Amino acid sequence: MLFFLVDALSKMMDRAAGGGFLRGFSAPIGVLSARRVSHLLFADDTLIFCDADMDQLTCLKQVLQWFQIVSGLKINIGKCEIFPVGEVANIDALSHVLRCKLGSLPTTYLDLPLGTSHKDTTVWNPVIERVEKILAGWQKRYLSKGGKEVLIQSTLSSIPTFYLSLLQAPVSITDKLERIQRNFL
Image 1 (cartoon, rainbow, N blue to C red):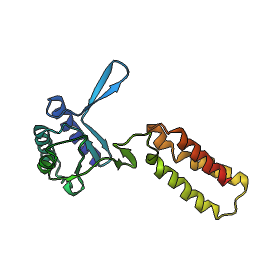
Image 2: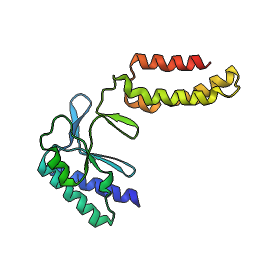
Image 3: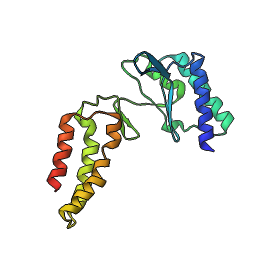
Image 4: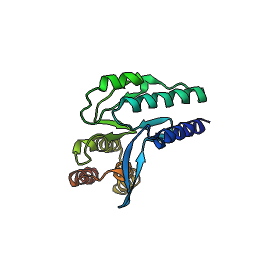
């Protein structure tokens, strides 16, 4: 049921964007074309993209109010944040329109970094820390070399996959991950 309601919110956002009330950003598709993206949905999380413009935020507020009326759901404003990209002169007034907290970049969303360069090696710290934590737990067990190899292949190699599907790791990070695994053996 929730997914049908969230789909309704998506359609409302599409209509607002289609009418030019929300602009979103342009994402390239291939070489010659692009698609405007005004929002992204994942389960019950929503990312909304618009310009730092009072009219767009007022429209967004109206869309969200209509969604609450139509669906009977209440948006948890306590969990909502507005993230300015670059310098935004009237950010306090804009965040007041939606009555949400003011966030800052870089941040994370679904454990992925937002607002930072993928070339920045600190972005990869959560992946390295997770690998090291898992290995520390395995280090306490008496495992054969074959057992260690199976654990590395089945478990450790899948940890960075999510990051690697979206970001290209710097060579220093891939070298470090390989070195950590090699030292475990």
